[in-house]
Amino acid sequence: MTAMSGIECVREQVPLAERTWFKLGGPAQFFAEPSSVEELQAVVTRCHDEGLHARLLGGGSKVLIRDEGVAGMIIALAHPTFLGIKTAGRKVTVGGGATLANAITVTVGAGLAGLEPLVGIPGTIGGALHGNAGSHGGDAGQWACGATVMTRGGEILGRDRGDLVFAYRQSSLDELVILEAQFELEEEDPVEVTKRMQKQWIVKKANLPMAHENTGCIFKNPRGMSAGMLIDQCGLKGEFVGNVEVSQRHANFFVAKPGATAKEVLQLIDVVRNRVAERMGVELETEIEIW
Image 1: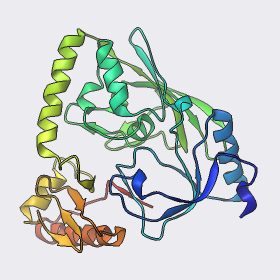
Image 2 (image 1 turned 90 degrees about the vertical axis):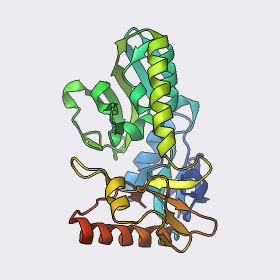
Image 3 (image 1 turned 180 degrees about the vertical axis):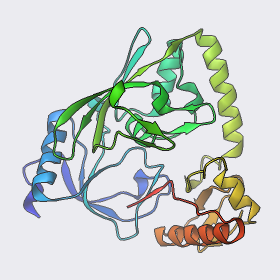
Image 4 (image 1 turned 180 degrees about the horizontal axis):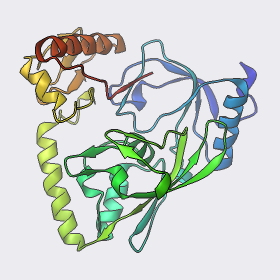
């Protein structure tokens, strides 16, 4: 298709598996890694004009790519243009492509508290705000005071605190791209914030699959319940389809062994969902996006 000719940052049939935590799935029909806001805008506008579906790929922890790959355009904000983190008093401005981990490191080091309960959550700031990533200590949205976004038509808009609505694992920031986000945090002794962050990280790490495993968190927690606990109570830890297994360490994670396919992940999702519905009367919703 000549739809993307003339835009230098666009490539065709680019493998996506290594860009996701599961390390599974086929290629993107078109893939772009723009080096400026203008280049990003050119890609997005062209996709809009040509009727080509565009999606943003962040850290890849919440995405399962189907074995046959993804039609349309996949955009990654990996260029330094989109990775900036600047603090000014209690305010911090973070590029949409910056990792949540880097934003936490910078803010904690500057003696700004608020984001440290999110330690250990993978992915980018854009993804964290779009899906309102969180843990028991809080979520990304509660500290957000503004954002700059790009619509599917390529228009750049500002969103202030009054425009932002956050709920469990969702937000009103549903435009195609979060270019930049602003947070207002609380000033605190950096040593104290660092200690608190380290404690939270130790607790989380103990319950997560091993770092070397190709894995993903699958289901949203139903209101007032833990998806992992429900799956565990159904005796599903260690359950497998082909080369994909329900993690022995945390039942809401699946582990893809060598030779696994995305199709096997989808089949195991059905097995677990059906068993939990039968035994517990709870319909589990997927947290992972299936492309």
